[in-house]
Image (cartoon, rainbow, N blue to C red; front, side, top):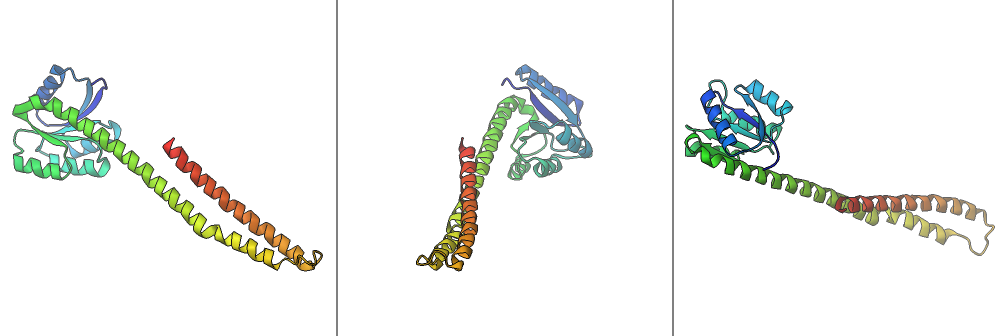
Length: 212
């Protein structure tokens, strides 16, 4: 893992933080970190430190992992969130994972931390790529729908006007005064038709740009 990770720790015990530092350094994981213990500090770090991953204890004196998870889900659901605790219990861990936590690590089994961090980051990257792909598809579908709407509705109006005006044109007497008005209206209808065609071309180019 070559990238320098930005890790946000939620932990109140200095000894436990030292254990996490030791495990990360033992595995030669390049990282920078911030360490918070309160809700206010956590919310500030989410905004200013913008972590790649969060490692959180389950219970702190004035804060807890569940609240941190809820805040994280509201502000940035894409950030992986791993609970690191010695008292969480499997039932609580499963519930937190259902609520959006990525994984959990028991403090007496920290040897599982690095593989779980790697998997969490990989899964987060896949989810990000899928979200981007889904957004591109959504925009493509929207553009295609707009093109279909232009073709089925707005194209018909100018064409119907042009055909109707042609039928009114007095070909037997080109000097008939009505022909002057018809030609003016034909110009208006033709320009309207040209605008619709231009819009279709623009929407088509948007789709091409999305897949380029």
